[in-house]
Image: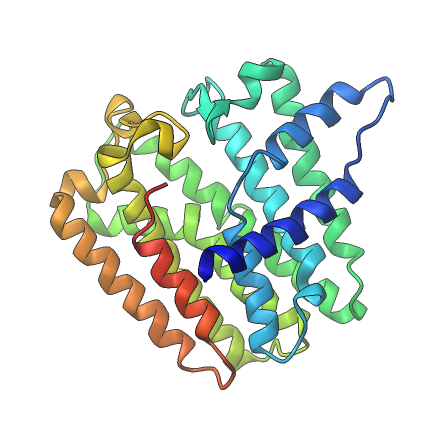
Length: 292
């Protein structure tokens, strides 16, 4: 059931991406090709699905959050393009295909990431919702993607290649690098539906925080255990880059137990809402036992 629901959301997002970034013969179309290559490379669209489900949970429609969801996916994709660059994680594969810089060169890949980040805010600010909702959504998007959110987490991640963090420092990095965009997904879903009150945003943030930590712990496990072809990117990159992870700190079994506990805490946050959380429950549990 959940895979079918995620597939429907993926199609909705991909159709909107094709509308926003059609193929073009402009003189600078190389960067458009790179943007489309990375944006339409087969991602599961988990963050957009969560955002649109939170919109439904708060009495809105998935379409109310669609442009915000696309903007969030654009920011996520830009971060992956830049993460793969030689100056960052130096990964040659992403989602089973050559990384953007391998397909288009480092210069175009860098500009493709810049394009996605910049255009994301154009898309979000022009979403078909009342202006006060759009403004609040853009503020949430920028704060969670920016200095004290995802960017801060990426800086900490790089620093941990040189000095091993303890569990608390690692958790703080994961909250920023991965959790921040999931907090944005849940929170902006509430905002898009016109239910961005303090109580809902607090519960949405609690959900995104715990889900983000669980998601990253499972990523740590997959980097050790996954089939490279199924994962779609090289395994063992954490070890190659001398990174401390929950697996290096606790081992695979305890790391999974921690991820399961964090997942249950995310589910508890969903219970604070009055609406139908069935799909969000399924997405949350699906992410715990994913294999890619």
